[in-house]
Image (cartoon, rainbow, N blue to C red; front, side):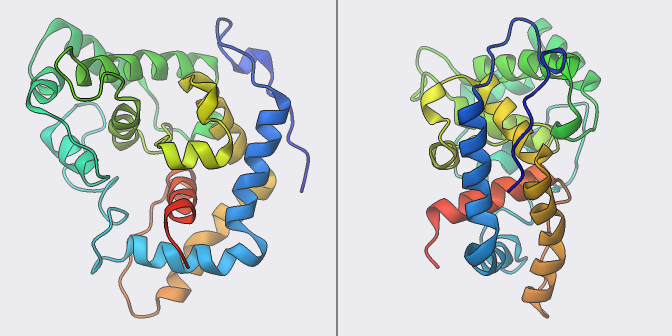
Length: 243
């Protein structure tokens, strides 16, 4: 495995915390454990099931369920998010969808987020991502909410809007990568950026679609185009499914 390069500070917002090299290295090692070597065949078979059109998993629909409107927040986005086993309650739905000055600002920020991969995101993009994520998380929460810290649901809403940029960040995947205890979405994002920038991880992700299609045979599958979404699907299925 190639040693991961240290992120350059000009590639990170000035007021963000620094990512520890040991955390970065451990996360890359864990990702490769799930994607390569003896785990590769199992990963491919799990992804066949996850992306199968005739199955009951979200893979074939989460990022592509129409209509896909990159510069708006829609009811379809919330439905697609619910396919990942989270709930968006009535109050949160109104805050996310009903016109308001705060929502208008969030939509404007969303419209400025480029359709690029997280691997290519620099400091300015990360700042815009942070502003949008914080608004989504705030809109999902309220004093009456069952979950006062809906960081998983917020991550999934954001991933629906920019599947190339926002990692899903659920508890299983974060624990597997060794970042759950960091309790800072900014560090999590930097870790995921290092994963998709890693030559070893990127090579495995680049080969995954062809491997999944070959293993699927005549079974119809719809595979995510985003390396970040592929990574999330491979890590999530690795942590929660048994071969």
